[in-house]
Amino acid sequence: MTREEVLQVCLALPGAWPDQPWGDGVVAKVGGPPGRVFAFPGEDAVSVKLAPEDGVELRAAYPEAVGDAPYLSRRHWVRVRLDGSVPDDELRDLLESSYALVVARLPRAQRP
Image (cartoon, rainbow, N blue to C red; front, top):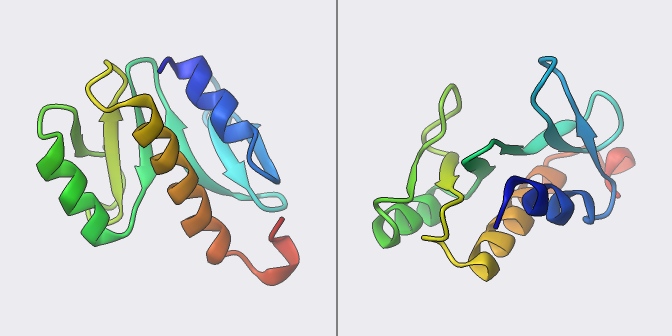
C-alpha cells in the first residue's frame, strides 16, 4: 500500500478529514476542529494508534516492519512500514482500528 492509498482509506471513513498541522505533512483526523489524529501517513510508513496488547502482537508478528512511532506513546502507537511486509488487508484493518479507538474517545457531539 502506498501513502496515497493509506490516505484514501483514512479519508473514506465517516467524518475523517486531512490536516496539515505542521506545514508539509498530512495527517488524518476525525472529529470537529481541532479534531484528533488517528493516522500519521509518511512516505515510507504510517503511524497508527492501537490497544496496547494489539501493538505487542503486531510487533511480534512483523518485527522488521513494525516499530515505535517517533514522538508518540510507545504503548499506544506503532509505526508500520509501507514496504509490503504487512498485507494490505491487515494494514486497512489497523487504520480502521486506529480510527475506532480515537472516535470512541471523542465527546458524543463530535462523533460521526
